[in-house]
Length: 163
Image (tube, rainbow, N blue to C red; front, side):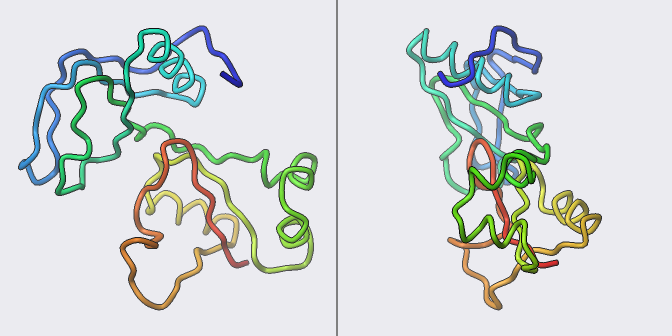
């Protein structure tokens, strides 16, 4: 594990009743976690690996399908909503980004990256972007597979923005 953690400060809940927003999918989750930080998430994954159990990440339950149903552990990523600065910080970003993106991020380009944890809502992300005088790019058509309006990934997401 790249960044081990020895403590969990989030909210654990055993045998929790869970249902999607529509109510057509419901079940009792054997172990349900709400990590308060990425460190908590690492702790959960360490414990799951040690106990040989699977971990499934869930958002707010908007799916019509049973993709959140798990016989093992479930992690609600809703509290993971911090801005992640190391990728876009001038001291660390240039060595982590490709040369093209480093030039855009730290040069005169109006295309910038804004990196956040995956539990953020689009509403909150837009508020933060607004304070930075940025906005998400739109594609001019709606494509569910590429929509910027959905949560993505269990750990973090990056959005291309315009200044």
